[in-house]
Length: 527
Image (cartoon, rainbow, N blue to C red):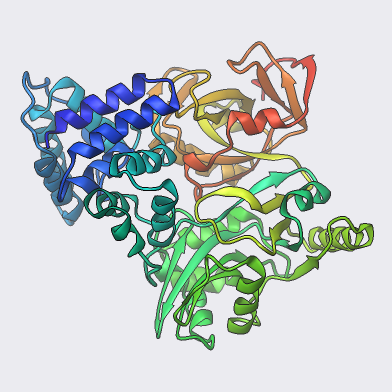
């Protein structure tokens, strides 16, 4: 299969506005893929390289050669070149990777160059999120959508699932099972403004502490332990205390869901930035001595040969308590959400959770299965302050004591349907510099410089990759921004490098908050 066919499909999908049309275009392209090309094409159409990490980035795309007049590149030779780049290490490897990219770009037509640039930079903005690819795989292979979702849930790798569906249909999809050692997309929680609203969604539920740490998924087989983040990065070597705690459990094989969090000298949870910085450090022994991590578990996906993801939440909790009684997150059960007494006791539990320094509670349906990678009514988070996960679109250079630091952040919500621009893009909601400590300013300046796309005297435009947790007092009408909305008194609570931009909140979520009619008084630009 030629690269030009993927490039043409990508551009057609980008130009299409209707979801159904996008799915049909993606499905048509997938049908043309066969054999070893199928998983590669599925990966590319979802916006990433098959290798996930190639060691390439924006720097390798500078000074691209003129495009080739005719398409000649095949899917196989491009994937082989990217694979070679991903394996290069040591002195001179950067130059070799640069040469690989230059050779590819020299042989690529203009549409193919645009596709390659998007894949290499991780910014292929064509409005084809993973959910659309899943639908397209089902359509292309003529199999039930539920079968594709189920296979993806237990296997976790979309290219593999796509290839199986296209080659073997439903029978091949049914062969997928959970595999200890293979990271899976975690189940996510939808937001609710208060406990009663959450319980109305879940029905009978367990109310648990919501920890403000780093989400981890832990796989154990005998003495082998692997620890993955919510973005599926392997951090096993950086968290030896987690490995030690899991090896002490009385299970031989398990996949467990939980959170690691640092604590202060008084035993209270440390701010997220402290935990995040500790997990990021590679000098493990000194980091562990200075900032030890504690492990808390809140779900079990597999225990000693039994897959549990289709089991109700109550059954998974029972297996977790038996496997790790000392590590399970505290829980208060509400059997009848209509019983005012039960709700009052749950609210008291939530108040005690906040008093202990945690950020809120998660209300988990006792009947819900574990739905990987999706937000639904099964898990609902309740926090006392209103927060959103937004993406930094740009930043302004600071003044006064913030001179030399990127300070005022331009914040955007996801726009998956393309209401205000290309589907899959972002829509700006305002700016803020509030809440940033000196340490946070230094970190974000360094990080945003790595993401810089374009720079003027005062403003640095960045790739929309860094997620920030924003607290705010409400949403108000504003003619200054494309969606006609702005956040009131927005302030930064935390940088969230552990979250992908695709996990940020959408403009639909922003609208779900009460919108006041008065216009805002203008973006916060003065410091």
